[in-house]
Image 1 (tube, rainbow, N blue to C red):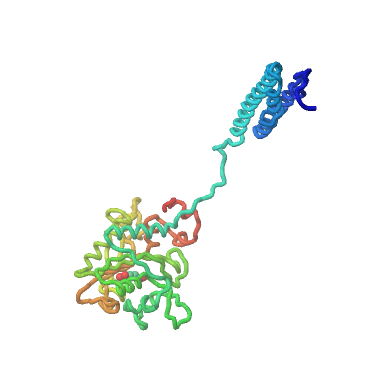
Image 2 (spheres, rainbow, N blue to C red):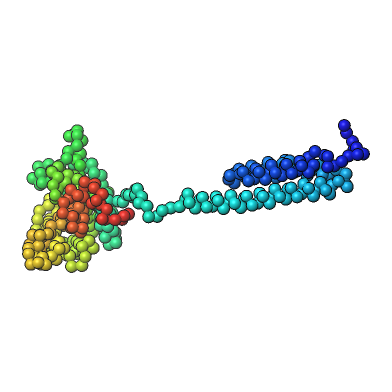
Length: 369
Ligand code: DAH
C-alpha cells in the first residue's frame, strides 16, 4: 500500500513506536555496557550510534511523518539517542581510564631488576696504545706510514744492510713463506717500512710506523710470535744523534710522564751506525734502583733503567740502497716495542695476558675508542 492514509497514526509507524525506540535504546545501552575494551566500544558506537544504526534510521523516518506527529516522535528518538550518546561517553571514559591503568601496570619497568647485560665491545689496548703513540709523533708534525705484514725478503733484510750472509740475519728468527722462490717473509720488524718510504718519497722524511711483526719465538711471559713495534725514521739535512735523543726523550715523557727520560747504550744494528739500545728511567723506582721499602726495585732489578728498544743514525749503506744521497742527507731511526710500552705503562707482568683475549684483562682499560 502506498500514499498517505487519512487515519495514519504515527505512533503506529513501527520504528517510531515507543516500545520499539525503547528496545533500540536498551539494545544500545546493553551493548555499550557489555563492551570490554575501546575497540569493542568503537564497534558498538558504529552499530548503535552510527549513520546506519537503528536509531539513526528511525530519526530519518521522522521527516516523513505528518507535521503534527513529528514533535512527539522527534522527542522520543532524540531522547533515546541522547541517552545512548551519554552512555557512550561515560563508557569511553571508563574504558580509557582502565586502559591507562593497565598500561601503567603492564609497562612498569622495575629498575631494580638485574638484567642480562650485553657487554659492549671496546678496542684492544694495543690498538689504543698504537694510536696514542702515533698521536705523539703526529703532534710533532711527523706522518704515520704503513707497510704490509707479508714483506719481501729484500725489504725486510737486504735493503737494511742485512745481506744473505750477514750473521745478524739469524738474530731474527724468521717465518718464511712458501714457495721459497717467492722470497717472502712475515716481517720480523717494522724497519722495512723505512726502506719502503725512502724508495717512494723524497726527503725530508719524518715518519712513525706502528705495526704488527712476527718471529718464531716460543710464547712466554715476555715473548710472543706476534708482537708490535713502532718504527721511527727521520731523513733530512743536518740530522744528528742529538735529534734522535731529543725525539726519544719526548716520546718517553709523553708515554710515562715527566722525568722518565732515556739513556743510550752502545749496540749494533746493521741498519744504523752508530747504534744504541734505548733504556728508560725505571718508571717504578724512577732511577733510584731501590723501592720504597728500601729493597732492590723488582721492576728494573736494581738497575734504575729498563730496556725499551733500539736506535741509531741511519747507515749510509741503507741510504744508498734506498736511493737517498748520503752526501746531502743524514737521518736517524728507532724501533720500540709497543707491547713493552703497554706493559710498562700499565704494570702488565705477563705478555700472554695481552694476547689471550680474556675480557678480564681488557676491561680495566675501559671503553676507550
Ligand atoms: N728493527 C730492530 C729490531 O726489531 C729495532 C731497531 C733498531 C729499529 C734500531 C731501528 C733501529 O730503526 O735504528 O730489533
